[in-house]
Each structure stands twice: as C-alpha cells, then as structure tokens.
Amino acid sequence: MKPMKLIAYTTLAVIVMSCAKKAVVTAPEPVKEVMAVTKQDVSQEQKKQEILEKIEQVRSAKMATEGKSMNVTSSANIAGYAGVPMVVGAMPTRMMKQEESLRDLNRGGIAPNQEFNTEEYNHITENQFLRVTDEPLSTFSIDVDGASFSNARRFLMQQSRRPPVDAVRIEEFFNYFRYNYPNPTGEHPFSITTELGACPWNDSHKLVHIGIQGKMIDLSKAAPSNLVFLLDVSGSMNESNKLPLVKKSLGLLLDEMRPTDRIALVVYAGAAGTVLPSTPVSQKELILTAIDRLSAGGSTAGGQGIELAYKTAKENFIHNGNNRVILATDGDFNVGVSSESELVRLIETKRNEKIFLTVLGFGTGNYSDARMEQLANKGNGNYAYIDNLLEAKKVLVTEMGGTLFTIAKDVKLQIEFNPAEVASYRLIGYENRRLNNEDFNDDTKDAGELGAGHTVTALYEIVPVGAEKDTLSKVDPLKYQSKPEVKRSGDLCTVKFRYKAPEGDTSKLIEKVLTPSMRGGSDMNWAVSMAGFGMLLRESKHAGTLTWEQLLSMARDSRGEDRDGYRAEAIRMIEQAQILTK
Image (cartoon, rainbow, N blue to C red; front, side, top):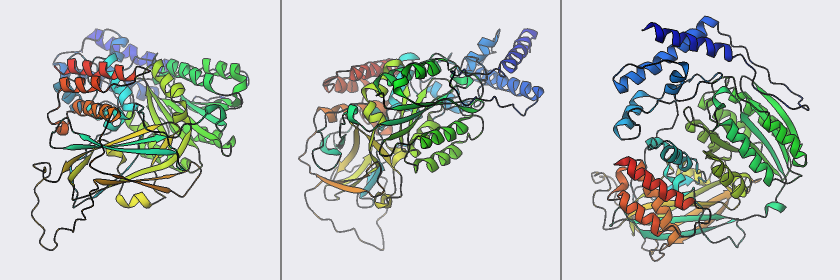
C-alpha cells in the first residue's frame, strides 16, 4: 500500500472515532427525559481495526468489479465508495453481496463506475401457474403499500439506473395509484369490483381484475388521533434526503391535524429518549420547535426506540380513537435488538395492544427495505418510501385518511376458480402476502389493513380451458385416483373477502361471482400497464411478448384522469427505463 493511501485510511479512522462520541439530539425546554449516549464496550484499538477492515472490504469489492486499483486521496472518497457520505457514526454495517452487484452490472442495473451500497431487499420468487384441478383456491392478504414504486422512481429518475430486481414488488406498482372504483353503499366499509380482460403479453390468456374501494371518511369528524412519531436520529440519517426530509414531512402532516389531536416525539440513536411528551396539536409551535431541533449522529438502537414509542402510545391511549406509531427511518438498525426476526417478534407482541404502525422509509445507500416492509406487515400497518417532499405530501396529506385511519384489519381474499372454465392461473405479485387456504377462515391469522379511502387492486393471469399449451410442467397421470367431477355453472370464479372491524376480533365475509361476460375498463388497463412495467423491470419470464414500446402505448392510452400527475410521472419512468435498458 502506498504511503499516501495509508495516511488517508489512518486519518479517516481517527476522524470517525473522535466524531462518534458526540451527542446528537437537542431537546426543547419542557423535555422530561434526556437521551443518554451508550458507551461502546469496545477498545479504541478494536474500533480502529474494524474501521480499517470495512475500508479494505470496500476497496477489494471495488477492485473486483473495475479491475483496477482504487485511487483514494481523501476520507470523502472512501465514504463515497461505501454508498453513503461519511457522517458521525455512519460506517456501513453490511456490504451488498458482491455476486448481486455483478449480476446488476451484467443486466445494466449498475453502471461500471457506480458506487457500491448496503441496501437490503428480500429475494422474491415470482408466482407460477397452478393447475385449477389441483389447486382451485388462491388465498392472500391485501397490500396497500406503494413503497416499491416510489423507491424504483428514485433509482430511475434520481440515479439513472434500473432498480435491483428484488426491489420491484409488482403489486405495489399498481397499488401505488388510486382508481375510480364505486364507493360502498351497503353495510360493509368497501365495495368489490371484478372484471375480465385481455392479456397483452399472451393473446391466448386472460386477466382477472379485482378492485376494492375503501369507504371515505370526513377527517374533520374522524376519531381523535394519538400519534407517536418514532424518529431515527442516528448518524446514518445525517443526509439531506433523510432527517431533514423527515422534519419537513412531519411539518406537512402537522398542518393537516386538528387542535385536539395529540403528538409525541420519541427518538433513537445510541439510546432512545422522549424529546416531546404527548402534546395537543393546539400547541403547534412547541411541537415544531421540538422537530426543528432534531439532529443526527450516533449508532442505531431501533429496538429500544420501538419499545419506548409503543409505551408512550399506550400511556396516552384514546379509546375508539386513532392510536398509531409512525416510524421514520432508513432501517439501518445496528445496536440492541437489530435482527429482523427479533424486531418482527417485538412488533407482533405490540400489535395486540390495538396500536397501529406506519413505517416511512427515507434515504439511499444503506436503505433496509426488507426490514421495514416486514415491520409494517407484522405491525398492523402500512409502509411508504419518501424520496422527495411531493411523495411526503401524497402519503401524509393527499392520502392522509388511508395512511392514518384504518377502517378494516386482517383483510384476506380467497378466489375459487372454476375448472370448467379455467385450466390454470397465476397471481401477479403478492408473493410475500400469500396465505395457506385454511388461514382464510382462521381469525387468529394476521393479514393486511385497509385505510379510509384506500383502493386495493389484484390481478390474475388465467389460462382458459383449451389454451393450456406449455404453461404447466408435465406430470404423469395419477394411478390411484381419477379426475374430480367438474360442475358446469358458467362462472369463471368466486371472490371471497374476509375482514375485521378495527376494534373487532371476529371477521365478516363477502362473496362475489365473476362471469366471462364482465369486461374491464380504463382502470383495469392502467393496472395491467403497471403490472407489465414491474414484470419488465424484473425481467420476468412471464412477460411473454411484452415490449417497452408496447408498454408505453398501453400506459398512454389508459392514463385517464390524472389530477395529481402521478400517472404522467409513471409514463416518464417507463421512458427512462426503456432508455436504460438499451
């Protein structure tokens, strides 16, 4: 190693170790609890060695992909290669797997000079076609999240590169948008729409469209809110698209709340603390002062913060009110309870206290999508990724009712296909929301939540009887049983929908039958376009004959009403992805 490089590495280690000791949160006058900086039970020499090892890992990975030496002349260069700016306590704790980075390089996802990062995404294995005579039932939990779509926008529009394959959850692409489904009119707080349409990527197949519209509520007359903001103020949040954006986002939400609503601020870094006890929104200036004084630094004790946030929410619980913890973080928990399984178990124990969870993801470089999606799924909550202030407005202002006010919980769908009409089917997306068939009638099984005014969309690709061809693997005929008897009713499928009231423990059932004569309209066509977008980004084998040119034409033709411009933005994303694919 050249002397200059050694000096740079050593200097970096000294800077990081000296800065990591600094306190990070400044609280307003009425603060009752003070954050304590947890002393690390590690010697200075061990810290130095760990930092140098991390630097060497980054250097080796970079050399492996570029085939040349890494010219490091400053600590800023080293931080850049790690995927995040060098800030207090922000040394990366995990490296993206090198083989995944090389795969993305080969498929055009990372440019040759693209910096490595430590972002985390769960692996997704796409749903396959299932034979109706073998598996007539398909059961899954709803998903109203749109985080995957806004995260993909960040990759495409801000970083000019395609998102990693596993960052694309197709159901979140079409569920990012609102649709003009009919408003509910009966006893149930939502309506169900079913349609049948053509499959643009396979002429011999059909698509089944299921749309759910949640009941609108008058927010001025809604139940009072008891919100606890759980804010990550660790060193990894010290970037313009993280804590500063969090603070601006909370300001937008605060403007929409009523004087009788209550807000508390809990923060966590090296330790967790209460920056602002539960305070009525009538004291808005006090709340804004507490938010404004937040600053970032230190390591991330996420589990401790979650414990304190739920404790605060429970102490100020409003019966028949909206009790919710709102977690804002990049998900990079690395102190205390930090493994995904431990955090999920912690959240699962808290959801039974009738306190809901909203997870807001921020930032890039060390973003942990996998962990935050799991926390929201297991915590009776929803999950959004905030990449800019306009997205914050969408989630916290335009769709405030859907984000914060739950009208139904443990919402499940079960579709029974008619083997006389359908040979096989494939659920598009929802891979991590699938349930066992017996879970549908089991009220102890957790499922997704539906917010006020939210829409939920599901799509199935079906193969009509007589058009099977090669969609299914060949299996020898069974020796000890014959084919089941098929009842010819003319129905295509029956959609069953089960849900609980927000405070309830017993589910209610709705059923609706779909016939081959029900044809889809513009809402279905837009949802299909977004499904196709996700499949092309995932390089799905099920994308069939679909091309980028065809997809653009579909999206433009089905854009429809677009008051907020979200659909126009999606079309620009498709155009950008097409360019990056060439």
